[in-house]
Every structure is written in structure tokens, then in C-alpha cells.
Length: 267
Image (cartoon, rainbow, N blue to C red; front, side, top):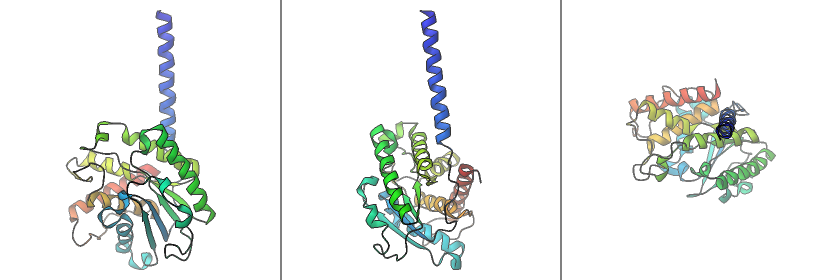
């Protein structure tokens, strides 16, 4: 009995070691920067995580404009969102066809965002991966590059807040799929996690559901997108959306975004 128990224990330890190795590998992004290195035509495809608070694409472009108006003036950002939608609800062929969204030339970068709970079941993980592969093929056919917007873990009162592995599973899903299809991963979820670690009192999620972003959460997402896409630090950026974000909060979120992006990509 003792020999059998020892053998079983060894098997469990081996399985755990293999799982840890796989997770570590999955959490290392293979793609470190977008191509081209300054994408001007960018499409955001997702759900309410994008359209909350006047839309993430709106704020991301204005962060770029505040950084360098002449440089960012030609940027064309568009957003296609459906409430509570997984990737499967979007007609990617229509969205990336030049002219359909008022942009004459093909999008250089298409940012895909799935449901925030996609990583929490095998069925949803498989569905996300399948659609990411399919959409990536359509995007690359038209000369563009795919990026994946890593969603944040939930906080209270969301029922998912009780799962301490939500962020790790989401990170593993986005990075593994990103590496498989050659997509750039935007580490927004990790930026949220780091912001809460540094300032537990900050409110990046809506208090009524612990899922959707507050304006500060959207700003953190915009800073992280900017730092990832253009390799520039958002620190010192003056954009504040009609004085709705304090200088103190903006500076904090800018530093978190900069630090998270540099650490994630090893820049």
C-alpha cells in the first residue's frame, strides 16, 4: 500500500510540474510588437468592455493625440461592438472589408476581445480559440495583424470574484492563442491586477457588477493599448476627458500601464 501511494504521489507531482511548465510557457508572449510598428488604422471588435464610458477606441486615440498631435492625426480608429457578445457573434468578413466601416484602406491592426469568462470552461476556451483562428485568417488575408485584448478578472460582487484563478486562466488562454496564431496580446487584465495590488482602494470595475470597467478602468485599458501598440510610455499624458480623471489617478494608471507592458514583453 505504501509503495502504491508513493507511486501515485509521484504521478501527481509529475502532472503538477507539467501543468506548471505548460502554464509558464503559455504566459510568455511570442509576439513582442505590432507590424507595422505604428498602426494607423485600428479596429476594435468586442462587446460592452469596449463601448462602456464613451468607448475605449475613443480614449485610446485621444491619448495618442495628446502625446503627439501631428503624429497621431492620421490615425483612424473604429469600434464594432455587440452587448455580451463572444467573438462568434461578429461578422468579421464584413468588418474587415475596406469601406464597410468608412475606412477606405484595410485595417492594419484588428483588436479582438472575447467574453470575460471565456477562459473559465473548456467549451468556451475552445470556442474562443476556434474563432480567433478563423478571424485571424480573414484579417491577415487583407494584410492586417491580429491583436487580443486580455480581459481583467472580475471583482466583487461578481460571482466569478470567488475564483482566484480567473486571471491566471485568462492570461494563459490569451497568450497561448496569441502565440498560436501570431497575434499581439495586449495585457490589460494584468494591468488591472497590478493597479489593485498597488492601490486596493482604486475602483476600476463598476460597483454594481464587478465586471464592467469604470472610467478609470477604461483609461487604464487605453493607456495599456497605447503602450503596447506604439512602444511609448503614457506617463505624463495630459488627456483627461473633460477633467473627469484627476491628475493623480491619471499618473498612477499611466505608470501601471507602462510597467505592466514593459514587464509582459520584456521591453
